[in-house]
Length: 236
Image (cartoon, rainbow, N blue to C red):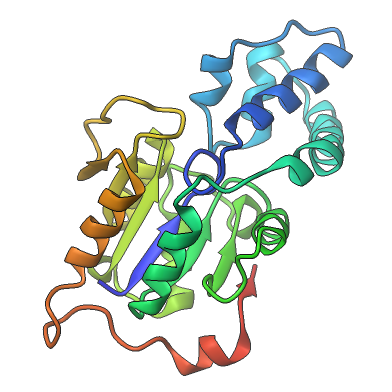
């Protein structure tokens, strides 16, 4: 194992509620009915227009773009400053970094927003590549985000694990040929049958991933790329 690809909302950050509340703020401001938390939370990782189409099935592309702009402005003003890492996330990111694992984000958010959130939370040297929903043309559960992250990190699918809390995360990882781990502290609190492994605590996640690297001397984590380490985090 050489690389860990991270989802953001509900995996690294305790922010699913912010996503739901922001979407409902935009929907109700335009006369729509607020959506249930479960309906929106289940769509974590999918494009914003998919959420808005729950309120307006015949939503036009122009309106979808206008609501996306309003959502991002509201999220930037109110949600980003309030976003926090789950307790255990920082120690885990640093433990993987110290073990020589490369790390990237594969979130449905825009790459720049993801980078801003994590840098603001003091996660700087531990993430090599920031990727988001605007980095590829097809959203999760298509494999594109994971495939791009692996290409940027120079890792093969069998050297990569995707960590996430939603069916879209796990579906993306499986479609890309990577290993998958579902965490139970995000939106989905029950095991997803598609997930290869399921963990309920950060300590368990660290143990599982570090065990995947294999014993010292076997085909496990290799030294981090000097090119990536030298240039600092990349964003696309």
